[in-house]
Image (tube, rainbow, N blue to C red; front, top):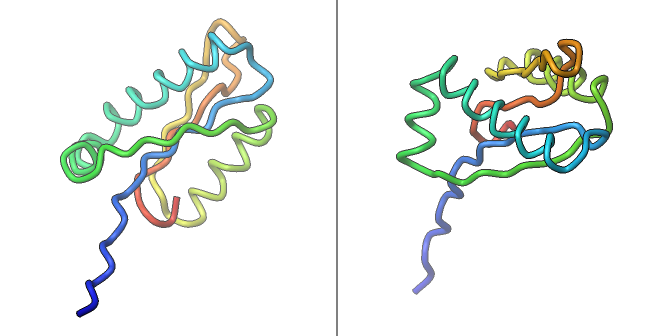
Length: 102
């Protein structure tokens, strides 16, 4: 008897700039996650209760984050972009709506 394959839980992806030092990368990743939870509470609650899988990836620089956000927008994914005052309001991290498309 074969078992049905189980669906993979939705992963919550955070992208952070690789050109930042490790400490700020961590802080900006957390900022992105918290900002997403604030901006999209229903999506965040569903992810938290049904999955709670989190993936943090790095991208080359601010331009790569902006391109990622634009791709998310084109795919109609919700996202949150962190603009950090300590970096002259530059984009430092992006959180993407949990799901297969992200």
